[in-house]
Image 1 (cartoon, rainbow, N blue to C red):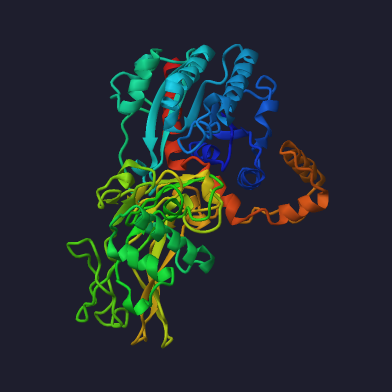
Image 2: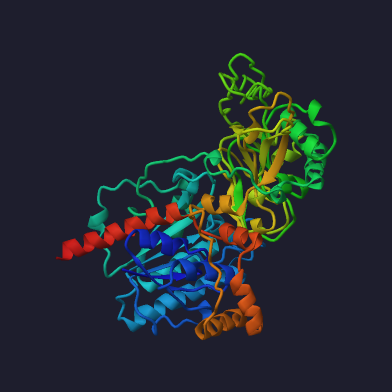
Length: 560
């Protein structure tokens, strides 16, 4: 099978496809950085550029087309413009498929996979959803739509997305799906019933084994201080919480107050919670333990990275670290990590969610509403504002003052995650949904730090940081090396011609000297955050594409 990946982005569909033996033949993308990444990772995949310039009948026919057209005007975080906004580029994907069908007498493509945000179901009173499904039916495809959540596929991020598989009616056989239970999400089943057209169940709506991942499993150690939240960001979170009259866990408040410079570490409460920094500073907020909120891709403020805090207690005899009945951990002591039986165990994480500032919970007169314990994080977005919490996540870590030198021992701590911006999420040991705006304000989390094994006297404080770009890539199930070594030191003539076309599409005329300079070092944290927040979780894509491969192989076997 050959794949045409439209709106290719991070290359999640080609990666998932090639893991299943599907050849990634073509890609269409206009953003320079994702193109640089996928050209390095898939050197044989041909880039077609701007989708509006592609003639589907003039390229080599492909059995499979994948596309996640822009969700900007369908997303609840957008302007809700529907098909009148950037999401209207959906029609270009339909056009490309129609041209390919016409050029091959209806033979290609044999199937497609469409991905987008769940709000597509309800925007404009459901009218856009009906237009989308009518378009697929008019092309001659019968569809299996469903809502899938990345957190059920072994990813520590709450990221719900619509996946619609379409099978070319020429190859569709309902007998192949007989006996497969319908596990379709209730919300999308209602939308399907409202639409009234013919669908099937058996690929996106087939049963799947639920797997879980803890956010702490992917957190990096010894991260650069540039990912720490600023005192201003912490103060902003505190102001928003206090303005709403909310009661928050004292550990969370202590961690924020310490990092904001409001009191000395010696008087800090040794507790930990996760929270959504950026959202609390602006219009939304969230908090969790051991999970990350959703990463986003928008380009707003500077504190959309989740954060976490925790408490630990002194057990001088055996160095135990445990959560008490209040959900807090006891204080770390100088004996922990010094050898013998004093090495601490990793404390169980507890996540807390802080609802968005504009939510009913935060506007309720109940002082305890709006902040809650949870075990899931929010969706990553594409925000690229300077630090706080990517996708609303924050990481709060125990920081140790090494006064005696010597070997350091890692001290495990609970992980909490939260989102920021207008739409907060919270989770325990998970990330909220990554979004495109994360490229300027990634989520925030908490994690353990290292301490000196020879140190008799050291104070444990807490640092709150955002997710790193590498952590965001891993929350999209991309390899941690995905953006490494993608630079081109000595561009060829073909390279210059290609990149001149790419920048020209964006209305950016660059000299060859400028192109060579950019190609040498195309990476920045901002563009990596944005790519992750705009992306598709590979594990989910691979599971759905696996169903298409199974159907295709079954069809061939039956035909033979």
